[in-house]
Image (cartoon, rainbow, N blue to C red; front, top):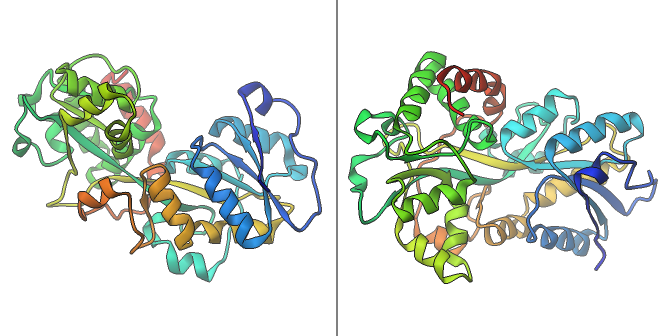
Amino acid sequence: MNTARIAASMAAVLAGSAFATSALADEINLYSARHYDSDERLYEAFTKETGIDVNVLEGGSDQLIERIQREGVASPADVMMTVDAGRLWRAEEEGIFQSVESDLLDERVPDAMHQPEGLWFGFSQRARAIFYNRENFDPSQIASYEDLADPKFKGEVCIRSSNNIYNQSLLASMVEHKGADGAEEWAQGVVDNMARDPEGGDTDQIRGVATGECDLAVANHYYYVRLLKSDDDADREAARKVGIIFPNQDGRGTHVNVGGAGVAKNAPHHDNAVRFLEFLASDTAQHIFASGNNEFPVVEGIRKDPVLESWGNFKKDDVNVSVLGENNPEAVRIFDRVGWR
């Protein structure tokens, strides 16, 4: 394998440099907050196509941002890759990225899926869907995120905590579409309808629906697909008890977020870094995103995972994902005001 991969714990990320700054023309140093085994296929395919090795340092987004800042102009980071526009925006705000001009990226990545000045680009999409209990709930009762705040669903909703970036971005999209007051009214309604205090991850919300703890839940679509494809019989059985709804099809469309990347401000291998971003928009990489982690590609016409294909096309919210970060501070304030733990 040509790829050199360094899996970093928090201690390692906060320690000294993992890479010696190099002038070699045949490598890039990737700081990644994505922790999916399938991403290894991306790096191998890039190296096979270009001859450029990918040295990978893994860690949490905030840890990697802090590290790049501490390394300063001597940072070996060429590319930072993470998930959720809120996290990409945080990196942008901390001056981690530099603007990239690329006709290929402009052509292949939809305008709504990248930062307007080219500081970062989204390369995979994740839909924040609504899940329901097939036995206990009639899905015709709910068609939008707004419906989750309807008092008739009191005690029926499972959803993660306000600390979760996925929920912060969902509320940030509400701020964009409904204004701060409308978003706060919705958040208060969801709090009033919670079946239990927020706990666990997205998979736990789906399992809560399967066990009858709640009739409705909010989670990213790929967590559901993982349960459907699990080697564990109990996981597959839980998934079969749950149905999926893509909300707001009669309006703005379903909220989607991104996994994305940008070129680091002081990238020592700038041209290779841009070439890596362009590769992430290629048919090869887009198919790996779609098949490896069950994400939706950002490029049209890419063959998706069979489960995703079975859902057909659905309307996606086309608001530029950068506003999900810009509205994040207001979303966090709203969560605090309504007591969303």
